[in-house]
Length: 97
Image 1 (spheres, rainbow, N blue to C red):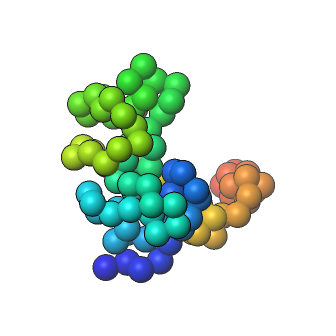
Image 2 (cartoon, one colour):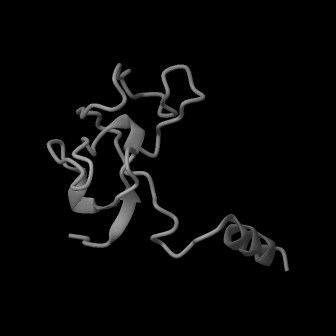
Image 3 (tube, helix red, strand yellow):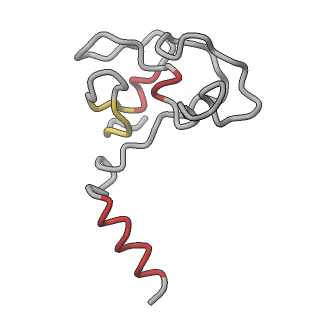
């Protein structure tokens, strides 16, 4: 089981590990549910149902815990060592050297 930070709370930004994304788990800092649409990598407010996974069933309240089988925690790029957009841009430019 991973113990490192893999994402952040959608409400307060507190770091979350893989174990923090259980159906009944809540953020230790703000007490908000963690397994919610707002914490999912498929969450996209620009889409009609706010989800970019086409097979997922619509969820009305994006801030309440749900049983969506497509849930994947949003990756925290800072926790993985990518602290700024410039780091990503440099990595992309290095591909074409």
